[in-house]
Amino acid sequence: MRALDIEGLDVDLGGRPVLRDIRLHLDRGELVGLLGPNGAGKTTLLRAVLALTRTRGGTVTVEGKPSRPGRSEIGYVPQRHEFTWDFPISVEQAVMSGRTGRIRLLRRPGVADWRAVGDALDRVQLTGLRRRPVGELSGGQRQRVLVARALALAPRILLLDEPFTGLDMPTQELLGDLFTSLAAEDRAVLMTTHDLVAAVDSCTRLVLLNGRIIADGQPADLQDAELWTKTFGVSETSPLLKLVRAT
Amino acid sequence: MSITDFLTDLLNPDLAFLPKALAIAVMSSIVCGVVGCYVVLRGMAFIGDAVAHAVFPGIAVAFVLQGSLVLGGAVAGVATALLIAIFSQNRRVKEDSIIGVFLVGAFALGIVTISQAPGYAGSLQQFLFGSITGIPDRDLYVVGGTGLVILGLVLALHKEFVAVCLDREMSRSMGLSVFWLDIVLYVLVTLAVVISLQTIGNILVLALLITPAAAARLLTDRLGVMMLLAPLIGGVAATVGLYLSWSYDTPVGGTIVLVATAVFLAAWLFAPRHGLLTRRWRRPGGQELGGDVHPSPRPALSQAK
Image 1 (spheres, rainbow over the protein chains, first blue to last red):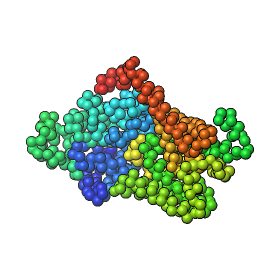
Image 2 (cartoon, rainbow over the protein chains, first blue to last red):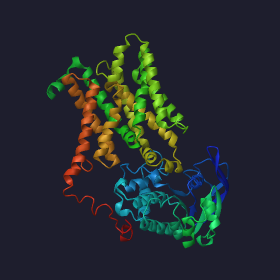
Image 3 (spheres, each protein chain N blue to C red):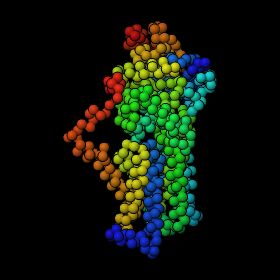
Image 4 (cartoon, each protein chain N blue to C red):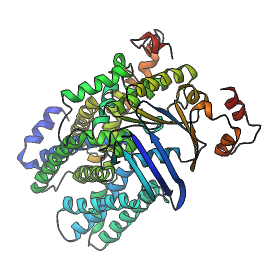
């Protein structure tokens, strides 16, 4: 059974086509980078996988079942600016908020919840900062808080939206290592990114998206300049292509 | 007037309205302090203002019909909160514009309605600026009961409200009903505003919601502490404000709000970690930002900063 199976997915936003005929499969152990320009539909694709956006056609199957909010085994790491960082809350409480949907109404977090939060913090190496207010964290630490919040549900699938944006190279590298090892622990990881270098470096597979899937393969197989010009709408002399050839 | 005189007046049976006013002012500032924490943290101050104005037509109708002002205000406020929540689903006009439209619309409706009542000028002033006299006993129970219901709902839905405040998208993906949680929060804000109208008045009621919570936010980085401090600040401001108002014969709503504002300014200047003066005094020693900001227990990750 595949971790994630998208078949013939069409999505419209405000009456305009955003995604057409998306066919994408993920197995556990894979770290897949979703690359594309702004407006290519990367975030929309993630939202469709989470069943947060209405689809026009096609199916999204997660671990053999149709995706539903709150029911599927998906850990979601939205873009960093989606989170209210000036909220007076500690790192461990922020991670616990990821389990809100699991804890029943009127109930407080129990032993199992705290254990899951502790494991997630250990996994992203934030245990030493667990009592710190989230507003005092650096960009890389914030990204790890969001990853830990997703991991607190012990998901089989992890969706990451632009995890590298606005971070310096050493931080990107560390996060890349973290994502690689999370995938190696029998999870399927799908991440959108603008960062070609980080993606080529850490991903087992790259998917080029611009409304449709332009290419899907291992980084080494995507040397063809035409695929990149088609995805990003850049000219043959773009620095992007030099980067592709160099990697 | 000394504090002893104030206490004597509070116990004087001829001045029975005074302890009633104090009870209502303290109860409503406690409730507003708690609810106000969400309002401040979510940046919903404008919604609070809108709801405060929106209850006006309900109060006007209740006044004309000689019904319960609290009930009339609650119905109008909740109706407006629902309208705002529904209309803001259409993203073509931004939420703050929707709020603006309904805020003035409701207030205008209130003014037109109350002008139909004979002798409206005096009652208008009472609605706008608050009053401590003429509170019926029934209102004491209504305010107390409503306050308990509000606090109970806050306690019950706290973790859901926090999740939605933190990250709406993530909350949706967890299967929380963000739309309904928003509506419940709007309704709680409305009810908190309505029960506070009597003493504080329509124009100033926003202060009870925002000022204590904002002052508490300056004093702490922990949500639990903030939600205890805010009602405490509100309750103290209400008591001190009523005392000053009684002593110097100043309008009660305005005096309470001024006391709360003074607490906010003091917090802004002297808060232990983030106060303006506290920071300045501490700077000569100035190591606060050093080694403490990124201490990760594991060297591999702390190198990354």
